[in-house]
Amino acid sequence: MTAATDIAFENTFVRDLEGLYLPWTAAPAPDPRAMLVNDALARDLGLDPGVLRSPAGLGLLTGTAVPGSATTVAQAYAGHQFGNYSPRLGDGRAMLLGELVTPDGQRRDLHLKGSGRTPFARGGDGLAPLGPMLREYLISEAMHALGVPSTRSLAVVATGAEVWRERGPEPGAVLARTASSHLRVGTFQYAAATGDPDVLRRLADHAIARHHPSAAGADEPYLELYRRVVGAQARLIAQWMHLGFVHGVMNTDNMTISGETIDYGPCAFLDAHDPAAVYSSIDEGGRYAYGNQPGIAQWNLARFGEALLPLLSEDTDVAVGLATEVLQGFAEGYQDARDRGYAAKIGLDAPGPLLTGLAALLAEHRPDHTLFFRRLSAAARGDDGPVRELFADPDAPAEWLGSWRAAGPDPDAMDRVNPVYVPRNHLVEAALEAAVRDDDLEPLQWLLQVLAHPYDERAGYERFAQPAGPDAPRFVTFCGT
Ligand code: AMP
Ligand code: MG
Image (cartoon, helix red, strand yellow):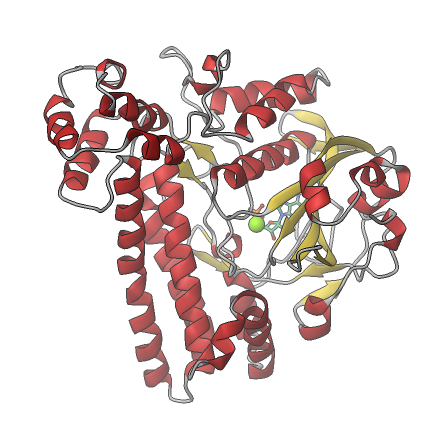
């Protein structure tokens, strides 16, 4: 374990990808205070959590005092936001400190969000309020514990500065997060738009080296990179769907090349299973609704393919043909992952006709998504009362339940893939409110602790498994992050 000042960052992104970043330094943090530090993640990274909490550690986590080995930059990227192309987004309020190589040999970006205005800030203030940074910490760590590839959260440090949002002044904060990289579809769009094939090629080579080293040996490495990213995203989106996760802002700049979930803004978990569920106040058209996510992922991957075209063939028609064929694999990859996952959720070894009936049952009657699957294991053990209670008409699922029971589902296997606890929207909001308004972190600590073991049912924790009551107002997430 090393002192904060001795941390050895590597900087392969900066070394390889000139043209895709601007050197940058963080804004001052007048009175830094550690709100959350992820001790377990720190240790996995080879960092000492005690050191992270020290003044030198807070300097690192706010970017105000970084070790000599760090070359801090704001990354450039473009992106389609709600379908509209912006040629220059980039990290407006974030900064890459560099890469850490963990004791077990993994390369991880350490990245700060809320560290001040960068040249990419456009109209933004470069800052982040405490509430949304605590929210990203909580949900990203919950996703990781649920087994979903995700960026991780190392710490949230309140800066002591004020941030102005719609509600008035709020405490400012910096989130320190890790990722296997911060390469996005939007990074490739930016590189392609430079018109310099060398920039694009360096980016693709860097992505291959980092995420798919074995693709380097393929006959067509860049097509192989595309194929693997399409596959990783198909599997990722299937996991979101299984868990009822709604990302909320699937712009191409918020879709990674690694296949990790990134940028937890207006995201939410379903309560009632509803394909049209939208939680974000700015998603008026429902573009990023729960049930639209696979189609949107495919659309984003088409934009990725377009960016890669110059690397696939000198002949554009040939390149388009190659990319189209790979992109067509998304639907197959997604459906396969979706069906295998749903088969596992209902305790069967392989997908079959029961899945069609299941989808129809859920869409028509909209039971609580998480409780439905978890209570199904009780039904497999012989007690179908609890699952039937989730339906306005408890007889509605009877026929499907009958056919399904006859298929011999394995309830223990089901309990390993159907969580008891997900970040319930009303609990998340209450915990954030206590943290920000009352400076009381206890509800958030409880939630973090419960969500660290989402598949293990624990006595006394019943309220963490319950949806908001029927009289609760419709839950909306705001983008005032
Ligand atoms: P997001 O929707 O959070 O992924 O952000 C989209 C883009 O807006 C990215 O380029 C961000 O860096 C930028 N951005 C978001 N909030 C701010 C802010 N407060 N100040 C500067 N840039 C921001
Ligand atoms: Mg983003």
